[in-house]
Image (cartoon, rainbow, N blue to C red; front, side, top):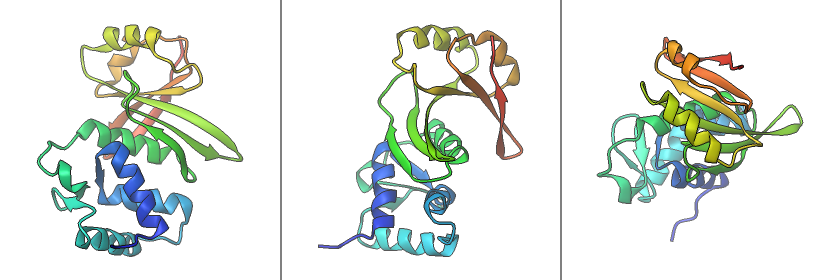
Length: 180
């Protein structure tokens, strides 16, 4: 039996919810709780987890749980995790991935209070369907983040929920406040 450290357990707990994670996301996840936990430290933890067969590498940068090795990488989840890490200044308090239409819902502490977010990946042409699905969703306490592939999509998304739009620009997400 192998004992994992609290930091390794935090990575594994997050990975069990998201199924996939990139190395840079693991570094950012630990840096949110302690800025001193640098890339070299995190890579050492990941190598130990791989050695005791708690994780497996799918590519040079993406890892998963061993039983998910043959599953295709969920790029939408990786994008949703990037959003989560952009909005997180401390430990993720709660995380769920089984709340459609949301890809990822999470609670995190920021500036001495708790914030709640729900991330939706909006495929081109699905804006109306996404908007309609929000009517049935239980997310009145969440700020919704819509990940768009094209900024023009925002014109077709209408919701009374507090929301932002995120679009990838030169490898980083840019955020725009939504309004109706």
